[in-house]
Amino acid sequence: MGIYINRGNYDFSQALNSTFVDKSGLISIINRTLFTEQRRSCVTRSRRFGKSMAANMLCAYYDRSCDSRSLFENLEISHDPSFEKYLNKFPVIKLDITDFTMRYKDDPSIIGKMQDALKADVREAYPNIVPDDFNDDFMEMLIRINQATGDSFIMVIDEWDAMCRESSDATVEAYLNWLRRMFKGSNTISVFAGVYMTGILPIKKYSKQSALNNFLEYSVTSPMGEERFFGFTREEVKTLCEEQGRSYDEFAKWYDGYSIGREPSIFNPNSVMLALRAGRCGSFWQATASYELVATYIDMNYEGLKDDIIHMLSGGRCEVNTTNFSNDMHDVKSKNEVLTVLIHLGYLAYDFEEEECYIPNYEVRREMENAVKSSGWQIAYAISNSKKLLKETLAGNSDYVAEVIDKAHDETTSILSYNNENSLACVLTIAYIYAQNDYIVHRELATGKGYADLVLIPRRNVDKPAIVLELKYNKEVDAAIAQIKRKKYVSKIEQYTGDILLVGINYDKKEKLHTCTIETVTK
Image 1 (spheres, rainbow, N blue to C red):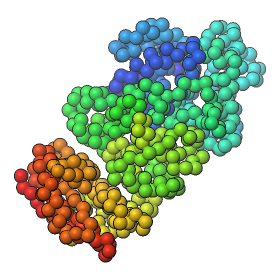
Image 2 (cartoon, rainbow, N blue to C red):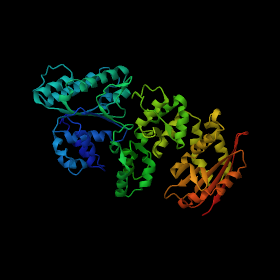
Image 3 (cartoon, rainbow, N blue to C red):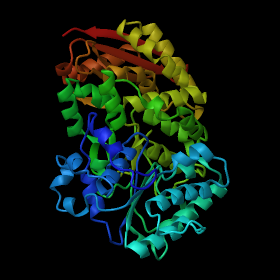
Image 4 (cartoon, rainbow, N blue to C red):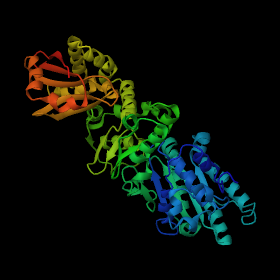
């Protein structure tokens, strides 16, 4: 067993010893590309969405130095016609770029060190092919081995973009040149039966062209019909929850919400597994990503980006053009590029049919809130006071509600849009953002004979009253409550809940003050 070549199947066997969701169907997708013009695949997805698991699975399946039949015989791939054809048939080279960026991040000779390590390991596997005094590059070594033995390799590169994300421009250029040498030369088709790269970012582009435009790319913005391999599907999570006696609805609230391709419901696999292990749902995002990075991006505030973030925090969606992003996190120059980075990092989900992005679930929303707080935005007041606002609303403290909404409106809304009705509705949603822990929040919910401005319906197994909030401008505050009753908003939601709180808020545009009244309807 080598360090980089013929590593065996140990890593994947350990995954099978744990709670496992079968994603082996991916192997059949890669099998169809072997020995074809599409033999080079790059599959990119967010942190903790199963990149390394997939890489280890592919290595275990193809690696001829081990017998992996028992690992796969009960998995989906075993029913595919290509299963026997390629099972344990290739010398496999596995390279994790983070092994080198962690050790030699700022070392200008990092590419040379990486090549030397690969050459030393492969020379041990083929001791009689390459002479000890061989001084050419790694690709030339593989060419000589291929010519002498006829062996074609499978190469798997994990975290392929780590160097692009963490190293200097000169190092990135050298690294991309090395990848070109490996995978764009005339000898690539004989040396490699297949190449599989995975990471967070799609392949870097220069101007409008990809540095490696001969790769077939699958990404969260363009999954090429393979969206079910980008995370856990609704059915897979339901099965896990049933097997372990957990609430699917709770898991859906925390970890669902990613729309990838035509798959409307993709869960974060790492968070689901950690929640099952911990015996409770919670935020595991902090262990995998840094909200300071997000704060840095949104502080750029390109083209009103902050307003879009506020809109998404309040449950809205924003248009985004992902096509012009150069796939370089250090070269971000527009709002569309910032939003596209956040999509690839997993902080935003992407609806490719509508070309819109949004915050996918409760776990990520909390991290976005942390990013906003650390950025020093004035909106931090509304978020920080959201928990107490809900508590005082449930207690019927209308004066406190009016005071908090007044200050949140003042600090959240720009002067130009201060008196905009949609702006105040957005402020309300932000102010009640904590409520999303226990409530499903609806803006402009169709109820009875009209649309309620904000409706909070308690989640299953939450023993709290529903809340209907109605906004009025330059009216008596009781007019909002009267409209709730007149248009029969309550009748639409009473099937979901017990008691209902009616909250009327009036905004005096001239005085720029809010008043509030709260009334309870007992079922």
